[in-house]
Length: 181
Image 1 (cartoon, helix red, strand yellow):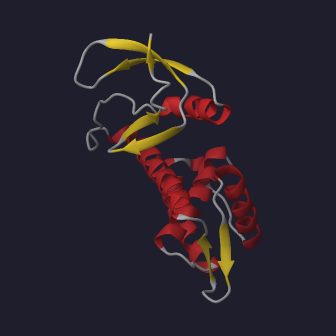
Image 2 (image 1 turned 90 degrees about the vertical axis):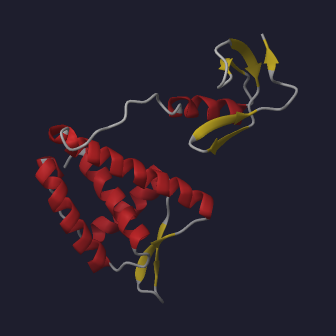
C-alpha cells in the first residue's frame, strides 16, 4: 500500500471520530470500507485491509505523526479523540486540508465542474521558520508592507508568537523590537 493510503486511512479514522465520537470498532471498520472503496475508484493503490490490530497500529501512528491521541471509552463503548480545544483546532485544520487535497486530486478530470479561485498563498510556507525563530529566540529580518500602502520597509525583530485572525497570519512582536532598517 502507498504512503498516501496509510495517511488516507489515518485521516479517515480521525474524520469518523469527529463526526461521531465514541465510534465502535465495527462502525470504524464499516466507515473505512465504504470510504476507501470510493477512494480506490480514484486511486487503485489505496486498497487495504483493516483489523483490530491495524486500528491499534493506526492509533499509535496517528499519535506519532499528527500528535493526536485517540482513546477507548469503556462506558461509551467506543473510540474518541482526546485533547483540549486548541489541539482540536489543529485537528480540524488537518481534516480540512485532507478534504481539500482529496477533492483536488479527484477533480483533475473534473475541471469543468470545479472552479478554483486563483489566489496568493496564505503564507503558511513561513510558519515552520517563524516557529523555529520563536522557539529559539532568533531575530528575523523581513520586508514589511502595510495592506493599504505600496511602499515596503525592511524590519528586524524577535517574534514571540503567531496569531491567525480572519484568515491572515500575524507575527506578534515586542513593541521595542520592531525596528525599521
